[in-house]
Length: 432
Image 1 (cartoon, rainbow, N blue to C red):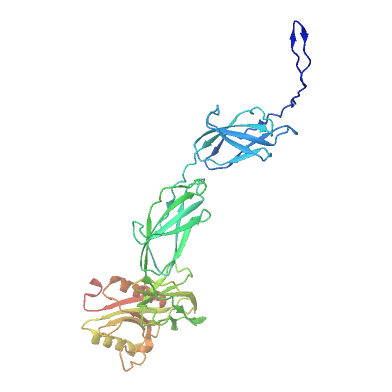
Image 2 (image 1 turned 90 degrees about the vertical axis):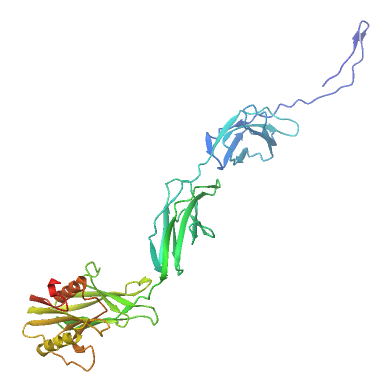
């Protein structure tokens, strides 16, 4: 309370009226907590402070500046008395903070100063896209995959697919980091180009484009044939037939049949037949199980392999001789090689001798293999049809590989103690 009186040499005046003023005890200065040393650009951080209970503050003013003297400070008035302020900034700099308490009539002095260094986030590493292979048949699933360094900062990938090497008109696929691959199945007969870029969606940063890879999708291949069950077992030396079927109009021009004594076909013998033949007749003497599978072939490639079928061939005693006759009559000698085969049929395979022939002739649609038993000639070409054990389609019997395949097949199918090979043709026999 206050009053005043005037004084001179004559004395003192009366007291003035009384006035009063209320002096508050003051509100507390907040204490700003250390927010940490640094944070990456684009990552949220929080500035927190505290003051004494019952300090009387109803709001706070927080100052943020890139200068420690706060000469260009940004003020944030916060009516929430929770004592915190969250921030996300992209600048590459140090930010300074201080805070004061306020109510309707008072404000405290500024708190201590704290700072936070915001560092830039590096863009993600450029991915490396793997080679998907040179080509696949149409309708076949293939996978495009890539890799990047661990901790590269990527959380999404953008894959581009195009039919032009400059990626004009590209199709974009957005993929999360849990998947670094892209599986595709297409029937287009063309070449596809791929490249990928890594993205950090938090900082909106991208890597450079990866290397480019391409894969050619060929035209549609034939349907996979269905291999029929050949039955359980057969005695050694008895002919059996492997047959198959496929969908009508599947475009197959030939079939590839594989035979092996192991079910992984690691040392398989392969037989190619034309599309007119969907069977393979065989007679073997080995005491083992034979496995078979078949695929269809057209100008666009090979179909998938059929399911595997097996045939058990029971053992018999080895014969003394297997005589292999190679009859190349796909020339002017057609009538002569038929005469040769007729002479063999008058004797047949007996008395410990197997007579095996492989024959081609000028009017033939392919090559035939015979197990000569002395059967009936028949009325039309190919003669002696009951003795045909394999129809191979068209082959060039002048090729050494065709002769080698015949010998390998004959010795495997008709094992004996001794072997004899006879070459019949227009050349110089084994010297040619």
